[in-house]
Structure formats: C-alpha cells, structure tokens
Amino acid sequence: MRKSTKIFLTLLGILVLAVVALGLFVKKVLPNVGPPADLHVQITPGRVQRGKYLANNVAACMACHSSRDTSLYAGPIKDSTLGKGGELFSKSEGFPGNIYAPNLTPYHLDTWSDGELFRAITTGESRDGHALFPLMNYPTYGKLDQEDIFSIIAYLRTLPSIPNEVPATELDFPVSFIVNTIPARAAMEQLPDSNNAIAYGRYLVRMASCIECHSKVDRGKIVAGSEFGGGREFIVGGKTIVSSNITPDRETGIGNWSKELFVRKFKQYADSGYVPKPLAMGEVNTPMPWQSYAGMRVKDLEAIYAYFRSFKPIRSEVK
Image (tube, rainbow, N blue to C red):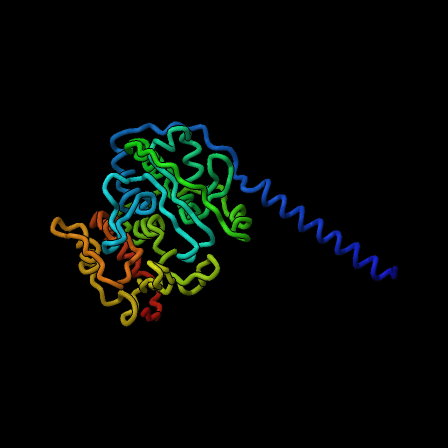
C-alpha cells in the first residue's frame, strides 16, 4: 500500500472516529443545562391570577395545550379541555415529525417538582433529561421574569385534572439529533416598567412569540431581515396560509393603523356579542388564536402597538 494511501486512510479513520464521538456526545450527553432547582413555588391568589392571564392570553399556552374547534374561525378552545394536551402538530402541517402537546393538568404534572417544571419551561430540558422541541418557545421563556414563570407554574397547579395519556413526540432525523443542542441555561430578565411602553411591549411580544410566526423561516431559523415582516407559510387543513406583515410599513404592514384600530382588532373577539363563525366549505382557517390574545388588557395591547411602531418598516406584501 502506498504511503499516501495509508495517510489518507488514517486521516479518514480519525475523521470517522471524531464524527462518531461528536454524535455520541450530542445524543448521550446533551442536553445538559444542570439539575432542576430546589424550589417550591408558593401558590398565592396573586400568582394564580397573573399565571392565568399569561398562560391563557399572552404566552397563550392553552391554545396549544387544549383541544381547539377548527370548524370555527380561529379555532376557539373547546369546553372542558383546558390544558389536557394531545394536540398534534404533524408532518402534514410542515413540522419535522409528529409533535404532541403535553398534558399540563395535574393528571400529568402532579409527579413533577416545581424545579423540574421551571427547568422545562425556561431551558427546554424535560423531567427525564430529553430535549423538548422548541415549538414551546423556551429559548425566549428563559429570558422572561422569573416571577412570571412562577405565576404560570402556580396557575397550572390549580387546573382541574383531566385524564389524557398523550403519545410521545417523534422527530425526524436530523432534527431528532439537532434538538439536543438547543436547550440552554436560562438567563432571566426583569419585567420592565409598564409605563415604558416600548420596553414593556417588547417583553410581551417576546412572551407571545409574535416574531416566530410573523417572520420568514428557513429550516427552522428566522430569515435575517424578515423579522415581523410576515411571510411565514402555515399548512392549515391541507392549504397554505401566510402570516401578515406587522411592521409599520404603510402599504404592506400596519403603518396606517391607529392605536385604537389595533386594539379593536383584538378586542372584537372578546366582545360579549361575538360568536365564532363556522368556516364555509373550502375556507382556510387561521392558526392565529384570536380568542386567546383577545383577553389581553388594553394597556398591554397598547404597549405591543407602541413596540411594533418602533420597528423599521419592511415592505413585504403578503397575499
């Protein structure tokens, strides 16, 4: 065997071993954000009230972790399903596998410590150590105010227990491999003063994950320069719908919207006289959980509007 061939094979062998070692490290060692904190979240009326508001109307956890009536516009949550989990986000909808929303009621979470639940929400590492798919936006939740996460945990502890065994999520390769690299230690921030409308609005927008839906996405990552400009495609009922531009561009965004119009757009779905409209034959639904976000306080919606108005306008016509 020629010397050059031996050198090539040796280098190839080293490369193969390095790849295998890296693969084993990612699969067996990661995620590794550290053990769950030894904490006990005191359940107080104030926390439960705040957690209910955040989980239902800002982070909108319940829009994914409950059953929604997709025969009606915007898929309102079905009665008596709050937090029961089981909703499927499937390959047919463009997801990298079959992803099931877990049961968030005490039926499932009773065996979880507060520290384990806090770690899962803020870092993406589950109770048993596996990495959660970031459909739940834990990379952002790990940058919220710690007290808000405590409030959500307190609220979840008060939900009626709903027996519902949820199938395990199955991710396709290579996402099943890559997902292990996503969980990271939380870097919690303080809740901004609500009188600072832009900073407070930014906080609420992060919690509501607006950027994830209202930006173009390529292979799971937001396309730089498209932030909040819309254009993300969603497959709903076998048909494609595209998210809207929410930058202050006057022609293709919300630049001509007044603050009052913006607030009214949400609040119409919370009006006592509002009745969800059945979809017509062939009509495409929206993934936007309008009834959930409609429960936001007017001051919070106004802060979100102020934050949106601070963006550089992006001309991005969505059809």
